Amino acid sequence: MFTGIIEQLGVVKSIRKEGENIHFTLEAAFTNELKIDQSVAHNGCCLTVVEISGNEYVVTAIQETLIKTNLGSWKEGTKVNLERCMQMNGRLDGHIVQGHVDTTGTCINIEDQDGSWKYTFRYNSNDLTVEKGSITINGTSLTVVDSKTNEFSVCIIPYTYEHTNFHTLEVGATVNLEFDIIGKYVAKMLGK
Image (cartoon, rainbow, N blue to C red):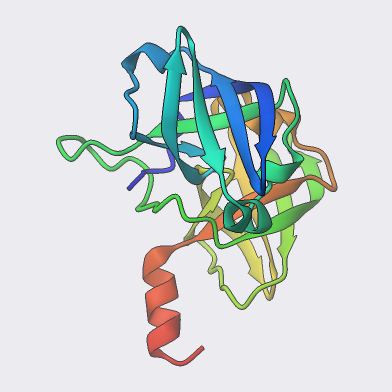
């Protein structure tokens, strides 16, 4: 379980394919605090730490993960939003995030709003967004500004822009999306 509040950016140091799986080695400042078998959200995708060496650690993505996320497009040097699992003795600053990516979306517009940025995304699934509802983009907990069928926008403050990989996104970029878990349950109960 995660909150969608990004702790830091990690950097992909190496990529190794083994059958249908890909092993990613990442460098992160909090690596010395990790342990084997710990869950860490990578651009919102929950992956298990399988190796640790110095300030680098390894996670493995299976085919199912690669199909549903943007992890297959990572290269050496890619900046990745990182969040360790939530501690139960603290505040829930973002929203309830499972680390289970629902689908990917495409950035279709970036608008500089003189002190903030408005990003618009399009996706192809039956999932819904609502204005002022929650959405997780590359693991970042955000509030939906505009909501249309298969399209929504969010606004990014300077802190989020600088401390997540939003500053690397361009129009056409593929992002991981996790829709609000409560909204998904409500939609299922109503037969949507």
